[in-house]
Length: 84
Image 1 (cartoon, rainbow, N blue to C red):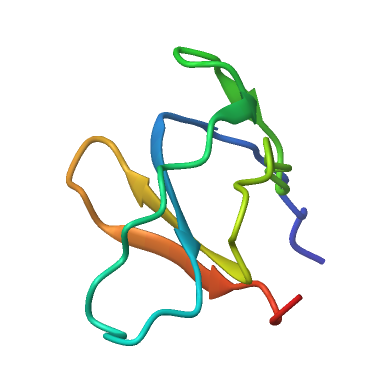
Image 2 (cartoon, helix red, strand yellow):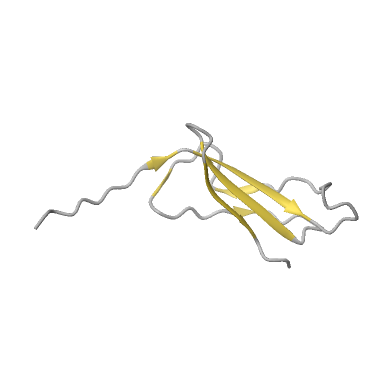
């Protein structure tokens, strides 16, 4: 029976978080960029899960989060929070 190999990689990522609000023109987003609380800029994360925490933006009804691999800017994850 072949042995199972487990591994983890340290990954350097770029996190983009955008506050989305209700505006007359949906293509214009005048809300400020949320302040990322965790992970801190330059932090190294290991494992299979990345937990993000940011300060809420007044007037935001949802947030869009994108995580990119820093080495080649490949999109790893993208999601929108449900409307609040």
